[in-house]
Length: 234
Image 1 (tube, rainbow, N blue to C red):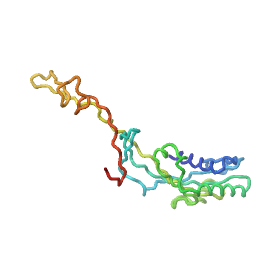
Image 2 (image 1 turned 120 degrees about the horizontal axis):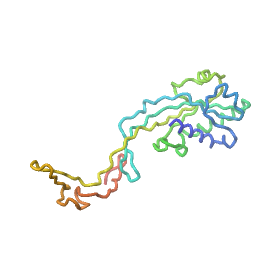
Image 3 (image 1 turned 60 degrees about the vertical axis):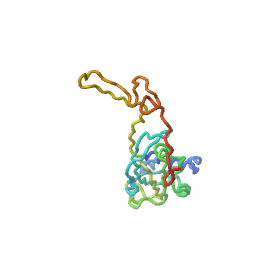
Image 4 (image 1 turned 45 degrees about the vertical axis):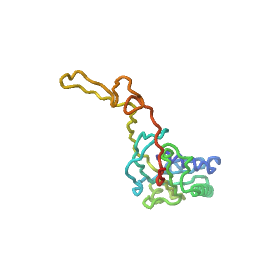
């Protein structure tokens, strides 16, 4: 899930014009040694805090359907995590860095969630909104000054970005639907070796009618239409 959020952020920033302007978007830790090796304008999106949002933890299990509408698995509810990033700009002059930060800020504050078209992997499969807050890191997240101090560098203008992303729950497959008739075998006590094999409700053993009762293989019927919550059944 984390790498999927990284990719969505990278694509979002690239669409803002950074890629066309030759600005590189990276996710490295902006340490002093890293900064000394930079030679091109760069926007660094550094992930420094990950914690679960316990208020959004659910219970129970949801159903996973196939293309025909049949239940094929049951999945535990997703668990939500807050990913906090430190976004900084690196260029030859402070004025250029501020211009880059301004462009990034406009891009990140233009919406309240990551666009669905930019999501991939499990984030796209879940189909849930992924909220995005720019300039407002979590209340329990380390401050920017503490992060820069831990990185061994000097304090630098940066934007705090928080993304709330779901981590897909575990899926457990369900048994396939029954499509064959039920067979019953019995033997009298006097002659236990003589088995009587028959299908329920039929006297014929070899070729029971295919479409009645429990006899023989049957075609898989279409799954019933699922009703939305609050919708009345006709």
